[in-house]
Length: 198
Image (cartoon, rainbow, N blue to C red; front, side, top):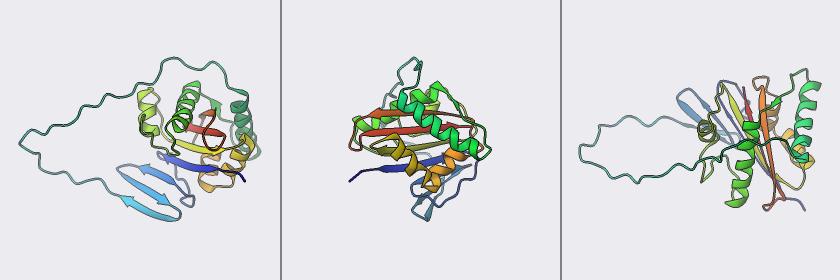
């Protein structure tokens, strides 16, 4: 018996197929959430008249991302980089360049999912991948994130490539850089995050 969890997100101007489960596409002013093959369009909330009486809002302190960048990939992270770039070059796509800022982000996300026992693009601590990139000063035109829990790197990669949304992120010609964060632990054995930008 093996356990695996997969989810993908694409944000930006690239057109990703909407056939995969758990893809969130944010383009322009709206959001499209796709669960299975059923899209749910989330429209921006209409502007309301301001309240004239003061409203008390709790003050929350943003969680800061630790400073400093990793200096090298782990053996498992390098294995994932090799698998991704082998498949990209087989299809005539440019290999993705490893960006250590994205490696840091992906490691933080993978550890956060283990520590806080969840599998989602939205962290209860750091927010969305967009929030994390913003807090780290990472700019992009388009971005994507794949997350998985699996027993091995090979199992996770096979599952990514068998899922249309994850495969689309890995093989998108719109991405030029990425980071991989693989942390041992959690219910699956490994938590794996892939963050892409273009």
